[in-house]
Image (cartoon, rainbow, N blue to C red; front, side, top):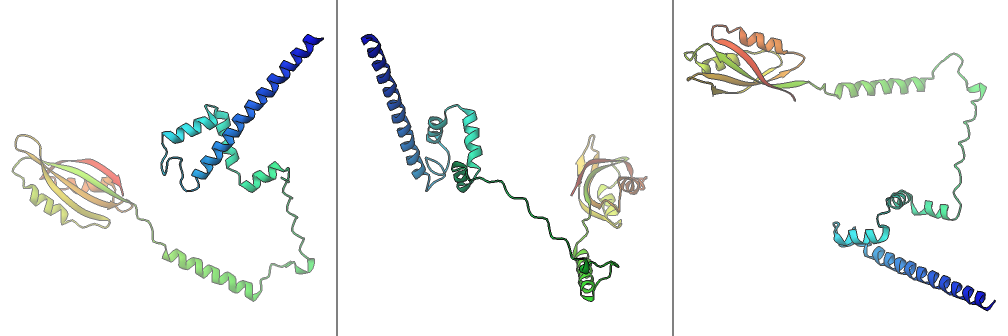
Length: 229
């Protein structure tokens, strides 16, 4: 009997010591949290205005590698403090369904779909306003920037004169840009030109037909780049 009492006493002492140590750790953690919380009142991170090794250290001390706890903390943090207080005190109530709108009085029902002068005036004003808005809206014009090469039959053809001749061509939706002469081989050069077109007015086939119409000078035409702008 004496041995049993001694064993029970030792077990009780160990249990008290365990909870005492656990409470000390918990108290230390709470004190640490309060200190960190105070530090974060004037700055977004523990070490200042950008995360550092100190932030990672404090975060690890608080959460360790417990990813589920971290996810839970993030979810709880998404709620306002007032909402967490309601959950804490069990005051969270289901939102009441909105009461259905009262049925209109039979005397107010317009059986023949007639509108009053005021209603018609309001409708006309709205239509006029919508029409004005449509007029104000500028139509978006789809355009493309095209860079292409022109190769001629031989070196005797004046590429600058050819470029001037092409740029003299005027078509709706066509804007000529810069050009340059690019060496090819054996003293030959090609003419590289840049244009901007409106997509609904000029197509790639139209461009090729226009360039290749100068058949005495142009041997071939190749598109290098075609970009929407």
